[in-house]
Image (cartoon, each protein chain N blue to C red):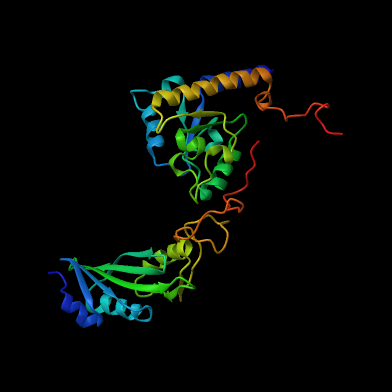
Length: 167
Length: 156
């Protein structure tokens, strides 16, 4: 790894920038993230800054069950982020649709639209749980860098043993 | 200003009115006379404000309720019933401009056609929602075999 790359990845781990995307949530998750920015939790002391554009962000925090109308927009925002990008799905809705699961207008969870790295449980999660989720993503970043990418985390296709394949 | 009275409303709109609360009057009209009733209510009863257009799916028919009010603070509901097969009614977007956007939403979710509406496009459902599916009808259920849109499912 070149010295310049090392410097960039060090800076990314020391100051991850986040972007918040509401994909049809009830706003409870959003105010918990904002509470994290206020002096009581003050996530900026950890270098975490909320950014206004996905092009500046490392971590995409998605709240809500992803409405069908928002799905293509969420995909577009995810595509605009520079690599390496990480996605954090917040709350019960982000995990599998929550109370909105099965309704005609939702996609049932963030993972059906963009790949998710970390889920935070709760309805809504507390700010300290959000901070914990971001710190877990920072650990993932470090491991991904050691493995040279995210591929080591995806499970390989199940290949049947030759003896199990019928002749 | 004082509330409208039942006799005042009956005198202008013709049909039998019902006072459900001191400031709420309900009039039921046939679908072909709804537009003239709304016109009379806006011009002669000073009901210049459209609060909402409600739709009720009773299972046998659709009930459309136009709720109007004005400086007299009486809520005047003009109710009409449409058959469930091919429901259509004349649009009132030219009498009450805010009605246009309610009519688009009702068309989207209930499939009621408003004749004469200049722009009866989708407003609330996603752009790739299948045609002929109206999710707020009581007999509608989701078909798991069918795609309801929402963009491509490409997960890496």
